[in-house]
Length: 480
Image (cartoon, rainbow, N blue to C red):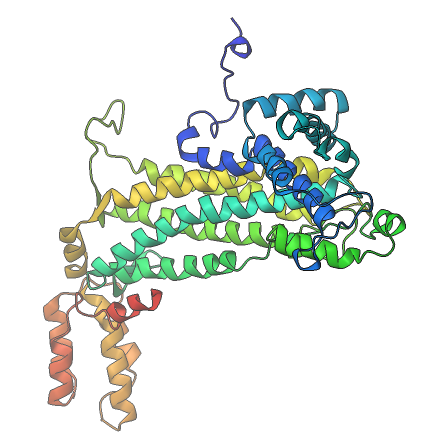
């Protein structure tokens, strides 16, 4: 039997197969049926606006020959969206098989629902004769750009952002808990001035928060201006209507987006490039966190909490692999590749329209899906590790040479203050410490050999690698 013959259908990609549970929330907003549901919503709300006008102008229809819709008629129209289900999906697919055009299939589906209005509302309803009002003066891209914008907006605000904030919350919890837990820093992979584990986590919080701030204030644009952005069909059909104001009202207030007044047939997608670029940047920062944490685990800084029944290696029973961080790394990379392609492709269109954006935008779900999967794994990984305090202490105790920075800097200050014998401080400490194993006693002997005043000598003598962390503990609070 061929795999393609098995029912239900086997998913082609892991997002809809192996990882369905982690990514399924995006189906509500970024699947093909979700897009069609939004298209119906846009078409219906445009009908209502055309029939009833603005609420502050006594419900005067914009299109002559149309009576204001009754509350019952509006409720029926909106129920087409509210009752969108499996049958709706199948009906739209049947129309598209004939039309070979996705938006035209939506128009015909709404027409069919208008024909059924009489059986619900009675013979007195005008809905059955309002089919010409469906898609009135619209090009497909009027419907599409609004629908895509709303789909992405809801997906970001209701799904992706929620998981991103959960990651931040977990990092904040860890940063505060470990804000004064000393750790040997490594610059260029070599022992360097100590820090705290909490402060190093706080660095990632601060970086990620900046990107989330941009995403939170992201504009989601929409256009509703006809075939080439000129309102030509609108103004020739009903010349007295203020179509720019009507379009602005529809996009801003009815659709909850930001009105774009100057477009070709398509909305230029610059807002999408901005958004995907920012999410890609967020992904890369989170990827950096994955890599650092993986290396901390390898170094012994973090211990992994074994999961009951889980297997680390098929042949080495002792292993607990940092697979959640590796999974997150890979999926952040996949997400970035999709997002970067979207950002690059969507901002270009041949003259007034080509269709490269249509198929490209159908991959927004994959772009955010891989990011969502990565966030899920990174969060799970962070919840499954704890600091190994013995290793942290051992590393600090084995690297007394990191106090060389403190000593030579104090010597510089003493030299500037006129204390004799403090010349060439950097070179003197370098001669003592560079390339040598340095003990506590070696540091103490050097301090004693220098003409420090008693207070300065005492301050330096009390210094140990585990307390030479500067203001790291205070810096953690800058994430709030």
